[in-house]
Image 1 (tube, rainbow, N blue to C red):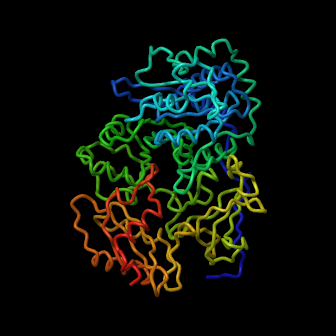
Image 2 (cartoon, rainbow, N blue to C red; image 1 turned 120 degrees about the vertical axis):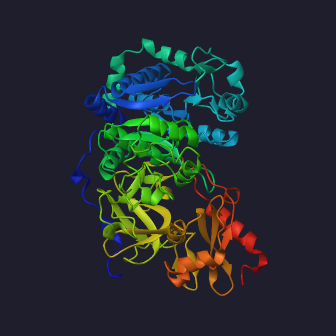
Image 3 (cartoon, rainbow, N blue to C red; image 1 turned 60 degrees about the vertical axis):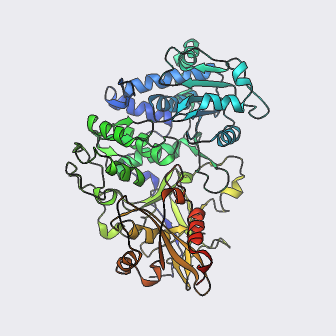
Length: 569
């Protein structure tokens, strides 16, 4: 591999990217509503059996209602408004309504504990919180009463304490809330919308026109696998580019019918489920929380073409008794080769995911990628070239010096979808002196200008003088029959520096043999990459996060505990 060229690569100019449209969320909604009008945009099946369907014009109307109510609550340009809900119609109307009112959407995780929610409310400075009361075993109204003493005895719009000095309005939406009465400082959704009846629609139109692509649009928080979650502020332009872009990269067309039970407060799900689906004039089928049996029924009933699942969800779907007899012939945007371990007779699609991509919330998802129809010879073994408008480089993690192609270091990027910054963090701490975001991810740029991701900088295993990517090992290991979840890590070793160890959660009924797995890997990986040990674990051992990620430090601790004092030998 050539190592003489600096590892700094420019993508095509953004102006040359096809298919881009409006660059603000209000403009995006207006454009798709005008183009797709009476076409179905959102579908919600309620537990009581009721089914709601909104067209694009319905969504636009409902978003305007929310915007008028927020203006009546005093929301102004840039003001943060929190959404604490599962996937439901009101999440989407609230998101676009906040942007129409000129505010900033604050996506809050429904997985939050009371302490985590207190931190997110305080850090974001949200003045209005739109929330769903009952989420599985949580009662967020009760949690808010614990956090804010004035909730129980105060009046709507009269909040504010030393812990949450900006919080003024709490608005509850719930499946059982129709006809519910206001309770203390918590206002019902119906009463909240009534506030906006006195606000002229013309004011919302003026605010829509005042939105700028560079204005803040979404404040999402990192999963917080290390330390407190970071508040990542993204512009309207960043969010809209990725929505239009996903339509192109995934080759979505009008019939796309997306299913998702993953939180819309996560950037990847937002960018594809809302951005890509709406940009292509499709419909989004919402499931509040993931229940495999319900998901299968929804997929069948709504003729879903894009099931947007995470790996652990695919595994649970396949384990569900009704999976193999379900009629899932509508699946089109589904990479069977990558996602399914066993054949499902009704699924005949040969469509492939964009196999090469890399991204983060800091760039509002992807910053390098190939589109779906790229030949295997181009995407295999790499994460793609920079997308239009982006510049990527690899730097020495210690000195910041730009490395040459082929040299492993830290990935850095800048471009039109780069975050506005972390809230509460000076720009010079969030970006380097040239304006690049340094990701903390390790890898190199190959001789064709494509990024090759190898894992977190601190997770790359240094064994016997060589660098081993745990991601590469897990990619191979994940295709071994009987492996449900895997995580590769390094543990201290006297002579090697670190020893490669893989933790495996087997599928139910699988009897995995360590020596057999290692022998199989030796036919697929260079000898120094093959794990010295394969350890059987449980999902509880690996402590999956809400985004189905395994925390590296947890995996390392489990491996070292299993190996005990013999780890160094």
